[in-house]
Length: 527
Ligand code: SGN
Ligand code: CA
Image (cartoon, rainbow, N blue to C red; front, side):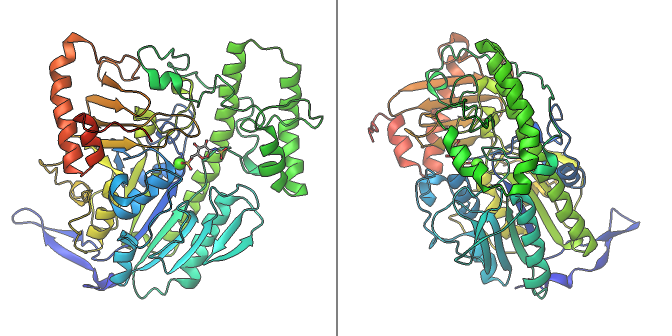
């Protein structure tokens, strides 16, 4: 450790000429608290969008810190996103291209580099990388996707079932680690990885009724007909179809067993069967009347689709409520312990999520709702606060940022860039002007075809490949909802040609040789 954590003290720094203004100095080796959620859409985080819910505690991070207004992922799916976070490298480099791959934990990650420099590192909650965590002094993880109720945790290799609701438990365990295991002699890097808001959106019993009967505005693109977009037409993540299951996803498990669906038994015998008697009593008290009403109804396909959207939103938002409250508990804890001054608090999700846009739930596509992800940072003392960063940032940047704020050199093989210049409001004029994206998990659940592409803030160019060979192009200023694929529009041919070249340049910059070969017609991917 180059400097001691607590070496920073109040310093008088000359501000301008003549007058002296007291200003707090920045800590050299701040703690890092990284709060990560699963599938949290920016549409349901009120610092970004308050059409559906207020999230006052998450907003505290934005109001007292920095909101990244243009934050994106490299590959919009869970395990790959986590591997990008740890390594600062795109999926084809870190090897985690899909959820099915096993993470190679022997490779360089930012927690290992922090640990080498004396940071105490811990990871609590969802991990999803199949191999055991490396680079952490302590870990206590959910197996696979984990459960909302009475979940199993694997603590340093040992399985234990814990009674309670997963978002509360992850927060409790995080505070326990800070209280009992962090030695306080060197800084910590604590990663708090929630299961919330992943499918199948099971609210805590205390929040069940919060959005009962609430009606939300149907997104403009809910009835999208996918004209001109084959991959969008052929996905299987539709609320309007049985991709969204009335029992499994929407909890319509009647006691008589008369509602039979494709995945109904997964819910009855799986997630629902985990509830204890007390939890089940409250659960049934909430859902039974909704089930009765549903059974008595006679809806057209259109009415049923919109009813499903409302049911989905009610549960998702109730899960979000617990998350927001628990983030508040953690922030209060840091405040009470006097830790906020010396801690970088970060909030992000592993990717965005569809809240009915295009008729969908889930993620994966390079379209805005799933390509974007929330990113909020509350820097330690000495930094400016309360502003918005508009630059294009991506989850490949997190590792470099954490190393940089800790005073470590960022290894040259890390592909992302430190966000510290942006936090320091230096407005670097050489900041990236385009993002690279590559999604691989096909054929698989939800059937989103493989694609890669470039986004420069205004225009987006996407190449779909494998069992399809199609381009899509969007002018986000004129078509923010991405419903008009302008790839053949004569008006855009010059910019499309230019961006095809820039996309090829990005495949070279990020060393995605397979994508480069696909573009150059040297490779046709068949498996
Ligand atoms: C599970 C979900 C899918 C989801 C993937 C990936 N099905 O397979 O709906 O797309 O996870 O999500 S479920 O029936 O198990 O809920 S990810 O966030 O982990 O990548
Ligand atoms: Ca996810």
